[in-house]
Length: 284
Image (cartoon, rainbow, N blue to C red):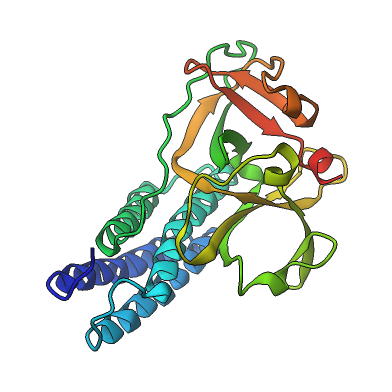
């Protein structure tokens, strides 16, 4: 729990984030045109570091360390930024033959800073899950993909990271103006349909983020003839489950109520399934 006695730890973590913003910007500059997305990650890291410093100045003048809602939101934004950084890095690697070896280290360090801040402030850590291993591999190809796990209630869904545009957090109370009456959300002037799997499958949010915060994922269905963006409301993004995997063999979905809404299912060694959802079907 954050107190005046350990506030120095908070300052050290903020200083570490500032250095990471400089290091990430340096790597982005080396990549020139292909590094534009990484430069945005660096700028966001710098901005959030400034927010942490602002909170630090405020904490010096108060004894109320528990109900500081702004600092908790900033820390969650740092954690999601580390995920968006990995998404951007992998997207960049897929489009180029060159691989930057320093970026994964820096983005992992950013994620570690976020987790250290979460532990210091006293908010709950994100839910970790075991990395799923494919049971029945498709032997017709040695192609590999990167997957990201979306936790929605008691279910774990996976998505090819090349279709994930970004992840972001919002306040369920104060950001209600983002949503319209037709279940759409406005993001940078673009109207995108929202998919609420909680209502569709009677799922209950199992990760209580502080201060009415919610997490959403923007997915672009580029595998379709007429691709469309959707916003998926989730409990959490499993940061540790962004991994490289061979292709699995398509099997029947074990979840009866979801079988009509999956575009593919793979078995895993852990007796869970990789469920790739048909977001278009879910939106109708």
